[in-house]
Amino acid sequence: MREKRDCKVEHRFPQEATRGPLALASVRGFTLTLEPAHAFGGKSIALALNMSHVGKRWEDPVRDVSPIAWRRSGSPVKDWAIQKRYQEGDLLAFLSADGMEVEIVELMMQAYQPPPGDALGNFKLPVFALAMVMVMGYQFVKQKGPFDPGLTELDIDS
Image (cartoon, rainbow, N blue to C red; front, side, top):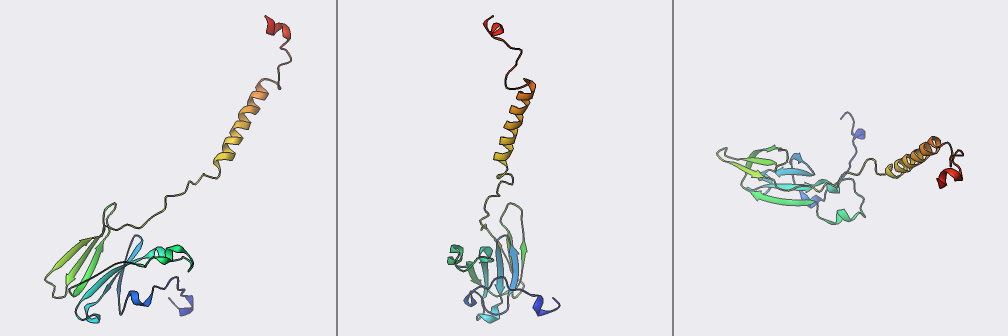
């Protein structure tokens, strides 16, 4: 970022959600944060912030739900890593402050994703109507008008 004027704040989470310096990571629909142990008397805190709040207006009912999906406190953590997996829960690995233990946690949470809209949904009715008009027009031209003038009552009776 060259200048602060070029930066735009899209969303602010409540101040009580997190404190102090954070390590951030992103998984689908959530931002994971790790707060170091020195800020909380020897315990590290990991929490997940729901990103469905971002971009919503204040009066939107989605904003009524807490942006914190979960919070977990534990022993001091020196470092952490995230492994994203396709169609499975993502993995979080925590290295203890003394470097002697590794704790691995699988994230089973999923963000709601609305079903994709039908890209041609608004065009179906006009396409079907046009197809019917074209079929009727073809039949009209093929029969040389609304009726065949060569057809007489004698042909019908026999």
